[in-house]
Amino acid sequence: MLTIGDIYIFVSDFNLALRFWQDGLGLEVAEQEVTKSSAFAVLEFPDGGPALRLFGGVAPWPPGQRPETGSRPMVQFDVLTDTFDETLVRVLEAGGRTAGEVEEYDGNRIVSVADPDGNTFDLVELPPEAEDGVAGRSGARDEVE
Image (cartoon, rainbow, N blue to C red; front, side):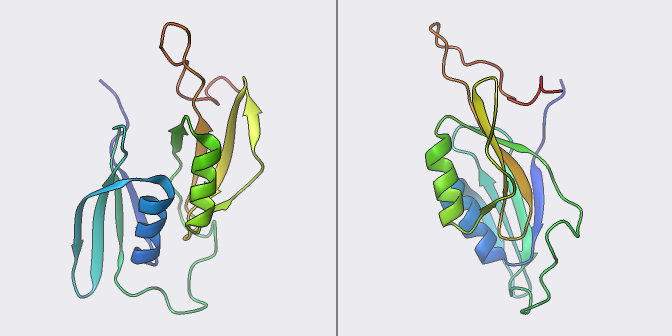
């Protein structure tokens, strides 16, 4: 069996990142630990899948010292949703930003989104369920050349 494991994201402002992932996307905190110098949280998607693990310092980066977007290694992954518009609004209201235009492939929308630290992921609209109740393929860009 080959599947995606947990996703690890190292952040510059733990509380801001936790708010983004918890409030913006509705992830549930399954585990959290904060010491005097560092913080860690495991967040789970409401409908299952791999967990998201946040690691960061307790104090945010000093003003002007936060790394520029794209200046560090990034993690790329998709977040699949059947409530694309509502999810995108929540993400933006929680401090995220789009990192490109909303595009459409095979009738499903996709947009690259950045969290407050500049970590990007693609928000992918799940295809509507077929008449037999089975949704189409999970990765809208899998067949894009």
